Length: 238
Image 1 (cartoon, rainbow, N blue to C red):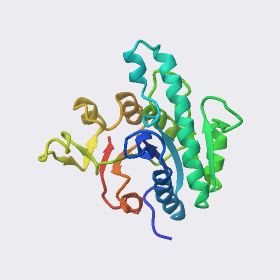
Image 2 (cartoon, helix red, strand yellow):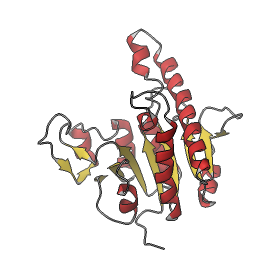
Image 3 (spheres, rainbow, N blue to C red):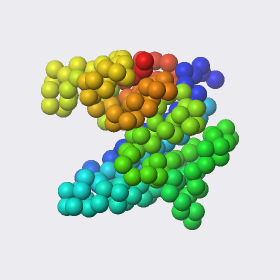
């Protein structure tokens, strides 16, 4: 077996990772593509847990703009993350990857309730665990849920999967001279308001010394390379 740098990871996906070309909905082919990346990682012997957002199905700020109650908008988003989790579970199991969905909001007909020790046991048995329902509380993002779950399951790293190959000092789609960082400190990330994760998630990782790695999920080799110790994307540490 190849030498691994990380043995247990929490993969944070945006809801848009599952979206069609319009940016909304669930595209089964995109789900299958992600499942293929995760399957390759599992075959290396890495424990994989996943938190996925819901931006492809519901954006809370849309509701807020028309006067919706913030807590209601957030609960709708949490429910949407479970839909995404089920879609990804189906794609993974179609490729032979045994998967469990756990939800912070109880819905026993479709998902297990989130129980930390059970989640860890699933990982020890080689199953992929997808955490839906955010933290189960309004006012917290799925970034924060990812940081929280990563620490609860003793992950070695929180991997933020994006469409770009790291963190830049400005938007590389707008500024062709944007500079990519290979390494950042938590404090620098917060002070410069860099779009890594929200400030609550970054602060939580900083307090618990959990590394954050930002990489391009659509680079077919990026995830494998970083797990084998290569320098890929942007690493945020102390």
